[in-house]
Image: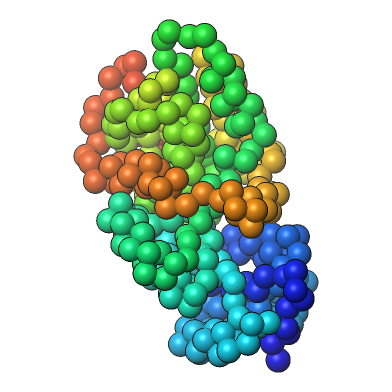
Length: 328
């Protein structure tokens, strides 16, 4: 039986409840004093709901989930206010549109959608429904990123900043067997694990002026981006062998930005950023479709170009090592 919300609560639905990132959304819903009314996933390994919202309805059939959501609209105390989307990347556009047409605002994980064409279509659905789409761009709330942004904004510098972005996050063999390893569903490494880093670079350094791909395979990608205020050599990898020797055996993830020789290691501080993102959205300060456009267009360009031989001044220092490791 669906619980009626209190007057101060908002009712949430969650699509993709069995996914890796879904618990952060459940936690954010709870920590912002709201209620997870109903959840959906084709998989039923969602026992974590018991520790967050045991009264929530749950469906493994989307039609039954959608029919239930429509029935909730009959009562102002049970109708849904928000739909949170954590489904596989290739399903985001359809699930966002479904949430909007339920009369809900929608909060969606990154990447919002794969192409600018999808963004334009979602804008039309926003106009048709009067509801709004928000994207989780959590790095815009990371204290270390905000500090770097302020530092760049206040720098009296005539030359562009020299930046190296390195993100290595170990994934096991399961990854390539899951939807994440299928480029038709995840849209590849640069999109799946890199899109919010490209958003961060735009957030800090301004508009993108040049986008060159140097290497891409199922596990790794590297290239060069030039912004209004920075030249960026970037590398992304899900191969544990690429971790720096000093962190192997100690950490499974390594994130770092080197800006003009100063290293900003920001592997920590991620666990609460979804709650901060929800707080900002609920306060009317969330990031919408146009905020996400820049990073969506960046990864779309990366996916649709051929790798070029890297100029020495544009190559990430680890590029040669990365190109040697072609097998898992």
